[in-house]
Image 1 (tube, rainbow, N blue to C red):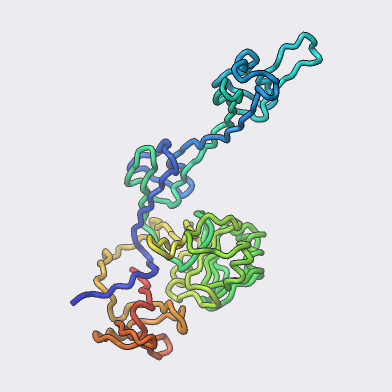
Image 2 (cartoon, rainbow, N blue to C red):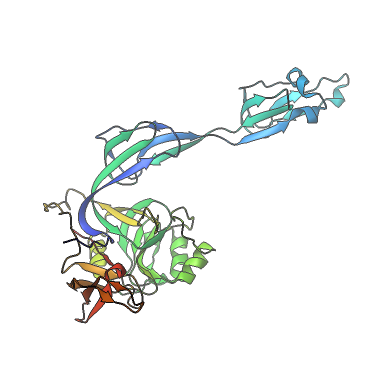
Length: 375
């Protein structure tokens, strides 16, 4: 019998993850296999070429391009500081002297006797690639980067914005169905990742930015508040590069949706621990989930059996409905009919039965749910 498997969000107390840390251009790897690293450890470094600034010396000096070398003070590959003289003429009357000064600090990249131009390049910018998570180096990719492995608790979200950051997890609310208001945020949360409940308003996000909160994890927000925060509508491309002052992760979706009890309980149990978060999301091919990674410490690692690779959806699996009219509701699989069922579109599809915590059940197409994976 063929198995039907719907990939979903991972919410697990203990797992092992590997994250590739790759430079955008060739550089130098700073660590070796077996090294222990922290989220803020520099694991690789590259130099980004500085900006090129062209100057047409021939025009400014009133000479032919092939005469430019006779007037240069700074030659090719020479270092220059801002306002250093690059070239000058030599008139009989000193008051008619013209000096061309450097607008930047850098070096002389090249001189052309064809165009009469000199190209200056600003100093390179150093790009350091951080470890992102506390863990150990299990692979080195020469001149490119490394792979970091960590034993951790892992919570994946539905949607996020903002880049990678790390900090201490703190609770902003006491229940998964409790909205987080500006009053829940305090100055002590500066530099922390704050866990909310069912909803996050625009005013709360503004307060978080004002206080210097680096991460917000919540069940849902209104799409209009996200639009106001960004200043534009998000398309279908990958997120994660937004500069809004903090990283935002939604665990359930858009609207006022209580955080799944299992997710809230796990994050509550890890309050006070260091976590690494990323808001990067891609919902099409090559799915990328926003994530909260909480590295295990010696006092939190417990002996647990290895996870068994699942073969398909099973009775009792926790699932979330991802289509209206029950979008966001969480229940457990209570039936797996083998026959196809007709749906309102007149298509015949495979379905399953979901039982909710209040005891009610519903039948939904298997494509309309996602499994909440856990340990």
